[in-house]
Image (tube, rainbow, N blue to C red):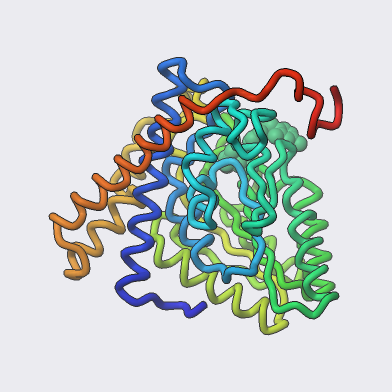
Length: 323
Ligand SMILES: Cc1ncc(C[n+]2csc(CCOP(=O)(O)OP(=O)(O)O)c2C)c(N)n1
Ligand SMILES: [Mg+2]
């Protein structure tokens, strides 16, 4: 992957981010209308991180997304139909109706490792994949994400340490969205930038504007290239803001309104669309068409998922570990 993009690539980023926002909005609306089954975690505000990082990977690279990375699932090839069917507990969903959530949205045929609820368990799993690639001498990279809150755990440090010692082809994107559930950043840690934890372990670290998709893409593409060259792991701290509650049942009254207003001015989806319009790469008419296409695509996927059958109750014990 190169670290810059031609105009088609830039438009692709706009498409994936708009599709992500449209699906995210639909999931939130459906939950509020009582049409959703499972827990719904909005990734509003995280679109540039999820899409930019996912887009920077090569086809054979592996990714382990977390709960705000809807855009990463989409950009790596998981269809809105399957995601929606999963959310509605349908047989056609990724987990065949076993987990109506973003949890478990793994599909190794797409090189996507499923997400489990326990944080940050994706870190050692992705590092294991990276070490396997290294051992087999395959030119592949493993990328995963973690939150600011999750970066305070022992597993975060153990993973970075081992990744550095092994010089593993591993990229960690920290989604610093200012909150872990209701706990603001400075009640969780006594540092301003999580990136300082990278050099402490011998890992290359960089801060990026998590609301600027091109910045995320470029930094991740450079980290992926470095990992593929055999130059070891990187940590990218992408600073952003969680624009809704932790999950949709959480109204986030504890977040100061001014903070949300400040970040709303830098909404990652509209920021990128405006940048493309300003540089003449996108006309207002094309932008309207793109938004319409995303809307129609998601509406069709909702219709499909709502009509799709539930799993056969006789299969309830299949594919689960405890029955
Ligand atoms: C081991 C573990 N403890 C607690 C939880 C419950 N929990 C889920 S998300 C979350 C907050 C995570 O915050 P952060 O890492 O900043 O990610 P964000 O949700 O902000 O994207 C908590 C405490 C969990 N999933 N796993
Ligand atoms: Mg957080």
